[in-house]
Length: 252
Image 1 (cartoon, rainbow, N blue to C red):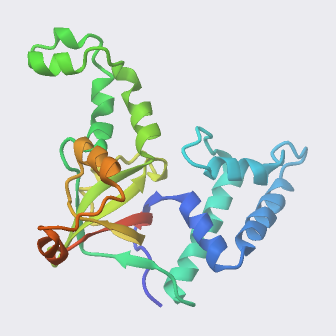
Image 2: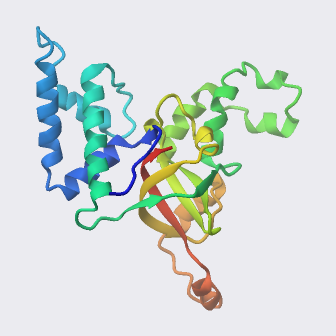
């Protein structure tokens, strides 16, 4: 049996893990979670905690909902998800696209959505950017008309997943995507870049460039589906594609 994590979990995309287990366990994950929630509800003498708890849990998993889990019941459900995922990936029963990604280093690219998401707590301290002597006039003009305190919420709604550059021990470049709501114990995206982190992810696609800036993201949207056949076809064909992974779980 392969090792899972020796230390602690630093990231868990519960929605992705739930969907993965549902897909590979013939839908029994919903039944397991429902039984766990019902058993935990019995602990509550008045049954108040059990107010359609399974529905509450699924709402909490969905997208970037603002639902915040709390209490023993929700913690037990999360623990059950994680335990079932651990059993699946360590026992290697059946085939799946989940890969364990070790010996990698993470980097937040400047001017990427992840870069701006990581500095938004600092921007929240600024009440009037025009009074900042350390910021150039051009940068001040760039922020005109922008509500700084809403940048974080806007980025979360725009991106969904944040892309971070990854380099393996063999110098292979990859892109890892993280759901911001999956960060645990008050960790930030920047914290992940400082860790000797181990990850489980699923390859979801490929791109031609490691450039993760906003401009490149917009260019990809506008050029999506367009053919590049022509004078540069042979050159493009020889270029190595950059794989993209959605990360399900990460730990140390």
